[in-house]
Image 1 (tube, rainbow, N blue to C red):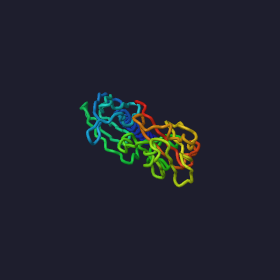
Image 2: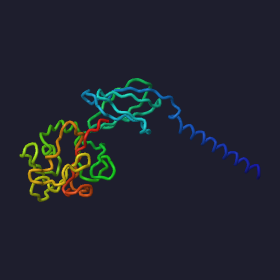
Image 3: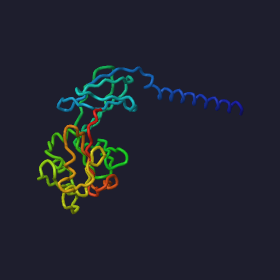
Image 4: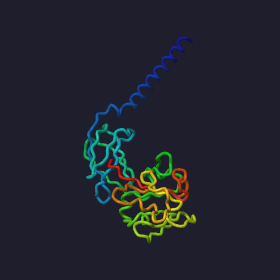
Length: 249
């Protein structure tokens, strides 16, 4: 009986040792791999370089870089790692690293920008696809294609906003989702980087669009219709419009 128990104990010990060895082998292979220096170029479908695209090592967000104005990047990564390339207005791409061969990565347009991280109308940044509010966003590329002649001219492309833009570059009117309003930007707040440009949206001869311009410094536009707009800004039961500036990173 004692010999049988001793045999069982020895067998269990061997099984545990084998499992530990396998676990050790599976947990550390990437860490122990030698690092390689990877260079590459990120372009869009037309071959134009994508500036500011983020390149990270999958599973290690601390190991990252971004592309320069020519779309090029350089990053030290473990051999056999996978790179994740993301950029506003484009679908994310995963690329496996094979040696130190220069990479040529082509990004496809994300027409609905569902994977874009948004910061307006929520306490924490979330992906547009995961947001529960009625949200519309335009990246710098989309704004360039729309070529608005004024702030109001851009906002007329937001569903749920009725915009009267006969005033020219400024002094126009916006009506949100049929809420009765006298004009101006009543019941809608315009922000720049999360700060209101002007608290009174319907001051005579001082409409909110007098204090904001859409130009090359604008990175993107995020507009929340109703929903959580009133939680994060005053005068916003109809909507919250946030212009986000480029930061140079």
